[in-house]
Amino acid sequence: MQEWFEHEDSEEELGQILGNIESPVARLLEKALGPEDLSENDGLVLAQVKGEELHALLLAADVLRKRAVGDTITYVITRNINFTNVCIIGCKFCAFMTGPKSPDAWNHSLQDIGNKTREAWERGGTEVCVQGGLPRDLKPYYYRDILRAIREAVPQIHIHAFSPMEIIYGIEKTGMDLRDYLKMLREAGLDSIPGTAAEILDPQIRQVLSKNKVTVEQWMKVIRTAHELGIPTTSTIMYGHIEKPEHWVRHILLLRSIQQETGGFTEFVPLGFIHHNTDLYRSGLARPGATLEEHLKIHALSRILLKGWIDHVQVAWVKMGRTVSQWCLRGGADDFGGTLMEESISRLAGSEEGQNMDPEEFQDLIWQIGRTPAQRSTTYEILKRFPAPSASRSASVDVQ
Ligand code: SF4
Figure (cartoon, rainbow, N blue to C red):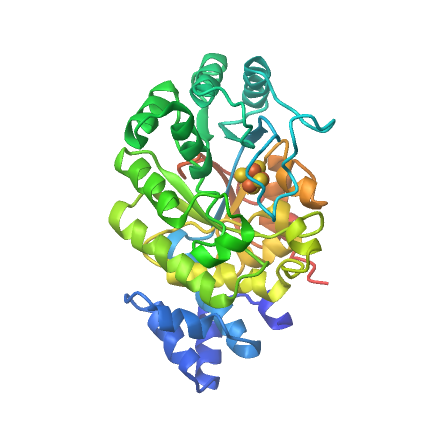
């Protein structure tokens, strides 16, 4: 793999490797570089590659990344606001939730949420990302009230809020119709929705991860309805636990089919499972997160399977770390995610990557891999580009 980390020109190097490997993989990668969509069977073959074939997969994904979005790597200045960690759902992979009487429980008031939004805006933030646990006694219209508090604090900030799980909970609490509920949230300030709570969109896997979580049908219904109303969403997968490569392929192709209908996904974000403090791992059900090979493979595979449909593949730096994120950005991904400013979900599960990455650090990490950093909006408008100030700042990544 060492040669891959040091490659200069993916297209030229891929041409040489494809000439060397006589296998169905070479034919599939040639198909991937053409206009045709890859099938489930094609994806299953590519999800199993190793050694030189994996090297070729990463190069092909990098070629497709360059064709789709060029050499710019984007990031967004955002603040996470996890307004409560009290939750009744009980997902086995979650180390964030707690009970209402726990000494570790927190519930930010509307005033706190407004203050955090103002602080984010003063630090150059263009977005707040708002998600939380699901407390039993949540007031029926609390999600709407959060949006109003944020809008009042900073009218211009983009509000990216509430997973499909929270939307379904809001409907249960208010008794409203899904479409009317989303319209109400949009009127209160909602701009886009995180496509989290997807984990793996497979009923059997979801039974093990969390029996109480939204079903595959509910998740798809919230997402489709949001897209129909013109509310964009992200799309995600959680990998590195009990799933197998075939689940990745089916999950990504399901997202592709939704995108073909609605065009409402802004990006795809693979989220590596952080295992340390979770019941899922402690009870022996899950493996201890993804391997390096799996991190690289899922980013490359998603670039290839989503070609022409979802242009942006984001790395979750808080889960994989900065260096592995840089490698994935050389193998198909093109977006570094957000500054976060504060982060609780991965930290409580055992991540040691910290809660904040300043824009200057994003810029340095991106220059190190020879790409051009750019600050973006939530919906991928480029707000500012940062060409490398000098050759010395564009040193290559230390792969050791
Ligand atoms: S993942 Fe979300 S819904 Fe599941 S237990 Fe954690 S906070 Fe609750």
